[in-house]
Length: 93
Image 1: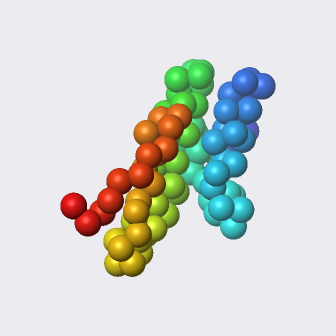
Image 2: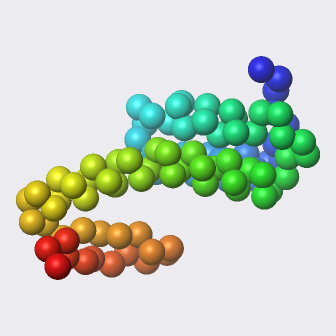
């Protein structure tokens, strides 16, 4: 694979997006981002954002879906991320 040139800001965005990913899955997350960027020309902030968003959907939603399923079985409230804020909703409605 060819090296991918990112600006400092773009690289910072990728690394910041990797922080909430469990440590044992970060390499796979970063690989997914680089795979999404491979062959893209030109690479800019929008391209990087779309690659990050796609990889986060792949790596974060699966985990939260499993947590929701387990919480629903246990009757626990569910915490949903709504942008910058979190709120709790009952899954037993």
